[in-house]
Amino acid sequence: MSKPSAGLNLIQTERAILDLKRHFEDMLTSSMRLHRVSAPMFVAANSGLQDNLNGTERPVAFSVPAIGDTRFEIVHSLAKWKRMALARYGIPQGEGLYTDMNALRPDEPSITTSIHSVYVDQWDWERVMTPDQRHIGFLKSTVETIYNAILSTEHHICSRYGLKKFLPEKIHFLHSEELLEKYPNMTAKEREHAICRELGAVFLIGIGGPLQDGKIHDGRAPDYDDWTTETAPGRRGLNGDILVFNPVLNTSFELSSMGIRVSPEVLRNQLKIRGCEERAKLPWHQMLLNNKMPQTIGGGIGQSRLSMLLLQKRHIGEVQVSVWPDEVLARCESEGLQIL
Image (tube, rainbow, N blue to C red; front, side, top):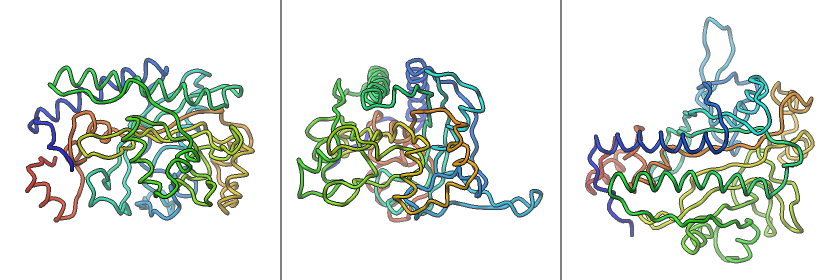
């Protein structure tokens, strides 16, 4: 059973969202040495820059008469664009970039739930790393840095708005294979709920590749995260999700997907696994295969997700403006939720 949303009115909520975002950005950028950059809302359809997600979602597309027949697509994320931008900006090893990513995902089937929306807003970040940092230890240390920024933001918001902290001081690391072994008779989402209820905060490693039962824990495109590199016997993947227990909704709550990005060799392998080797001919993929982009680690952190969590709201519409089915709006109104 979910609990009531925190008692902030609309103006107080808007101020708190701005306060939260400013504090988190300051913590993240100073600890990760990230430079803020501008980013596109749309990319050319034939550039290879679009995030294909699970391969079934339709991008919002349009053409510009003055540019001929070129088809543009509103981004699903900036997972691949960021890596190209690092090369273009000449950002050195140990530093990176971040940007506000605003996307539209009209095929999102879960907007009847409280945590999904057609409108997606993230802090998209990417950081240049050295070849010898391509290991699970570097991934874990980066996760801990991000989680510490989240903890700092929670402390800041709770102290200013009279809320009670709930996140644990440490994040736990678990491979998706271990989670399957621990809860063999549950679905992937049920496993996430169970482990978050037990541990409070988890980084779930190895998202995208097949597990021992032949299924994947969740979908990942083949051309940004590395989900095939072996890190230990029976353990593959240099990527994962930050998950926490949300006490307001009484369930697990995903805040971020991230990972060490594909090398040219890993890209070829993962394209083959997914049966989309033709993508290797696209401009972005050619740049990577010809070693014209740096080795990076990166991810996206949900802005509305983090705001919803730390302001202890029950519906994502309380912290962002989007569109909702009439029955969702009616339910929120009946429950006293203030949708922006």
